[in-house]
Image (cartoon, chains in turn blue, brown):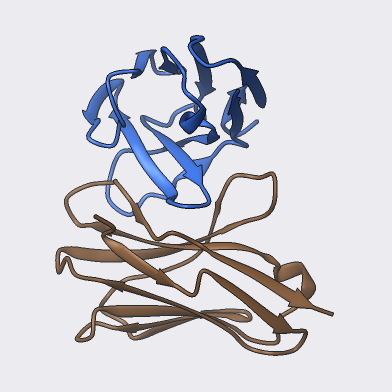
Length: 114
Length: 112
């Protein structure tokens, strides 16, 4: 299996622009997680889906952030408008729904907002 | 509010030494505690995990010690090697779901 695939790997944009991050989970996995990693706050869960349904989005910082999972093999995280404080590495992870199941992380997208 | 508190933030150890990273939690509903390892430019990957019905789990040079009464757990890396240099995250989850609550991470550097 190719593992979790994220694109783009790097994104540089200007403040106010819309940013879309993409994720393809491991085939057969039915839970998908979006995390943000910064030096100050470590690894923060933004939102997660089970069977394409958002379960907990309490970690989404504000209304500028939105996430969708239209089908089992694709998810997007959108920031509109972007701000410099959104600069971070964004990870997508997938797992099987259920207790104690390992989460498999993608390589991340490094976002820089100028 | 950070559900899992991790320390230290960074750690420098000589090759062959013991690296120790500590985590603490308050939520008594937590009953699964994985550790993830992250190399630069990569996503975190599962290293080792423990359930609260055991006090210790060992896999090679990596050992988790778990103290249920103190609500603390720690990762010990014996005979630390330069290849162990990475960021380590502790995490916890409850028996009701598959969401992990991660610590803030520890950057480990092993000096040759």
